Length: 264
Image (cartoon, rainbow, N blue to C red):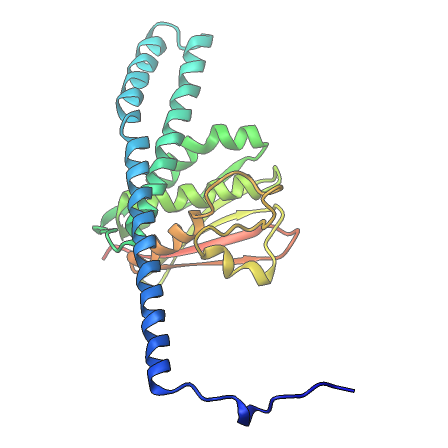
């Protein structure tokens, strides 16, 4: 035998005073969450600033040592070690800069100034800086970017976009070849970074552009990182009048396409 049941008609409705109290409580919760998010972003910006700034003079000193040693013994082990140290310091600075850019983007303080930028020059610089990482992973990077593509964008933001996309291709490319290509379509440039690695499932292709999300959801198998690279790529591209999209299938690699306006 079942026990007594209460019908919906017997449940007392929430009166105007109760509804007002609930709305006020929700507003307080939202305000508290916003304060917590603002405090977190401020902390993140402070940490990024403190991590990056001391490395600037260190990088300058390493650059001077590299120049001195390369003039005297360019093929020696010391020169090779200093070149590797320079690369590691540069990577550290870029990672701290990523944190700083994330905090600025989140708080609406990411101001980008557009100027004419030759795409091929920036691609060559980024690929050269990431070549040691690619070689260590067993991947070769091929570049097919016309010399006459001049974008209207911020050079540092473009560098950050390419750095994030190529780094992801190295991480998830399964030691396969990586291609950086570009072409012109109307008033835009289409920049493609492709790999032949693990790929991304259709259900995950929107999620990976959100903050703190990764293509590999399992932290035990995912490469190291903050999970903000693709989110920042999207924010930077959109801030410069462009966008980003991905085409991928599991096991067949991925191609990320960034569109940015061409300089008139």
